Image (cartoon, rainbow, N blue to C red; front, side):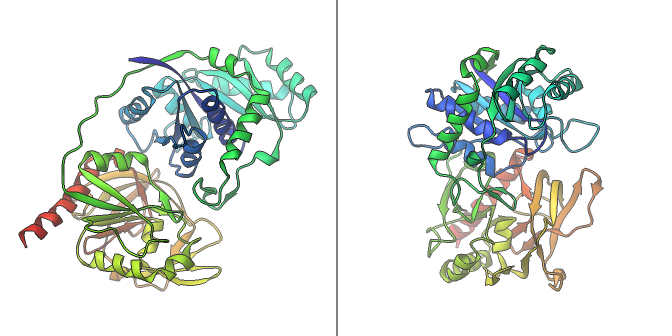
Length: 466
């Protein structure tokens, strides 16, 4: 067992600046020589990429891991936290939306507050202080009293206009017992660029490494980091016993580049633990698939932004289609599912994709689906037998064109959301290729990773017998 410093950076609402504050704190702590382990609440793939670069040590990024109170059981969230926080000096958990925002208006499920309580972590609340002085104290008082089990250990005021504004805020907060840990000046130059689906990803046209140092400078100018750390309790972390991955001859190709970069790190760990060797390849840049693959995993991302390059790379598109037609297991989510369709239609034109699913994806001006999802399979698939259940989320701007013949593709998911059963076609199965707009978290049903690897192994065994 080891004791570390750990805290949650939460916001009063989306857009209050908690991501900038989180990244600045991560980069500053790392610059001070500390080993920082980042985490992200909720179903987010983009912020964790920025976390990894802000916490980079010796030129290597530090993978950030998702924690989610609706998708994952409490014990799984605790295990993920303990697994990666063990051995670090400071663990920083970035929240999602506002502190108490989750899947409903009456419960905390899926909220940052739920994660803070289940991990027994103190919360640092980021407050957008624009156009407020004494009212800011009333706001904080409301958050502090809303749920007595959530420990708000301090407040950071963001977008503070001047020294006199900061003085008024600190004076107002003297009415409460919650310390002000810092006042950060309004600075639009440190904003991370964004677009549909969220921030620009860290690995493409996003900010350079200097951006994280500028965020560290910004945080350092307005926060007494030593006082912040001193105000936090020591958190005991128990390292987990790590099982030795099975030795197997299963190799899964992992599509990973600027177009396909949305993966839960836990999904990849569970696949490796089940005996898979993951070989990365780029559908954008590589002309051929890696040799001797037993399966493919094509995650989400931004294929619409790279549709021209993907369409031009006819060789690997042809190989991927042939791979799918061979009967070897292929799992594709959201952007990966779009890539396996006939075409992607954007505002710039129509681009040929892999042609596995005989439909077209068309980009829309507004998101077409957003929210948590639970699936149950109505047939055996590469993810497990009929009746396999799992949780995840859906968020995309594209839709299958209405004139496509959906009856030509069997669908094998029954889908529910927080309101109950959804009348949707999902989980499309062509041979042994499974495609879906839903991002599933294997931690919600660890048997899926084992089933995927076993499906790949079954193909290997058949090939050896032949």
